[in-house]
Image (cartoon, rainbow, N blue to C red; front, top):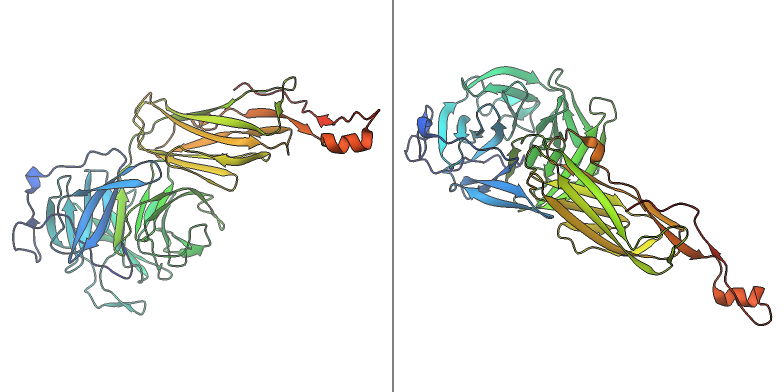
Length: 432
């Protein structure tokens, strides 16, 4: 949902010419409609010509892959949301503020203009109402929609096609899309600030965050409550929010993934069942205080993400803050990047019982006597067993020279024989 462009549409060219008000059916009647099967997909709607193309997305290694759902629609729609009550996507036509329902085949069913919305051109808070470009389903089952530049939000009952609640906001949110999480509606403005909307009071607040500036027309929620901020430039930022209801909520970017860019994005998602992902970590070669690794040894770490069930996972993110004393770190695992001393990976679907393997190598450079760290995994779905989301702690003991052999020979030489001093860690190496 892009604030600067509110044109957006469903997904299938309507089979009839009845595009005005009233009930309109696409290539399939209401009785023949096919609901989506939820597997944790992300749905992305992008403007194409005078219409909108809907895509279904699947998480992968470092990117999200999208496939078209039906052809481009005949007119624009926006403010989409996935309704878990019936597994259809709903959106609002840009030309006449009519409610559209989209099914799994791309068939569109129209229900006419929403009763209770203001007429186009109505001035609200000093801005003319032009349509709805921001939308998501709330926990009460209503489609919450607004124009991002107007200080008002409407709750729409999609079963009756009527506004059931009007929320006056304290200011215009300035967002291009929003999602519900942790009791609030969230979006991002053009400056990269994360905006919180209180549906009970209408309060609107903006907070500094770690996402860059730009348009965020596509937003969705992960099954564990994280929020996906999809930048119109084609980058997805996965953000975890803590202390959501406080005066100073915390925003942590968990991972980033690449996707298609568009100046006319809109997004939503469905929530798949909870499943237990766990992670373990091992090191090679192993060492201990009695057999430390010589400085300069190449060390290989192996991380294994395992799906313990009971459901399929739609994807995951892995992070690992690498220890000081490990240099020249590289990885060839698809979907993984190393920035400074931090490893970040994203991966796709994992069946129950399946593993995903991540490897990285580095050099124990001798600047630390022990290399100690662990990795963590964060699944897309809720996790019933967070205890195994952090791997075992791995300790690599390194034999670190205090003084080089040449220097020692000059200072401590005896009868022309030089020697070097070394320090050894007294820590036992953890079992790999």
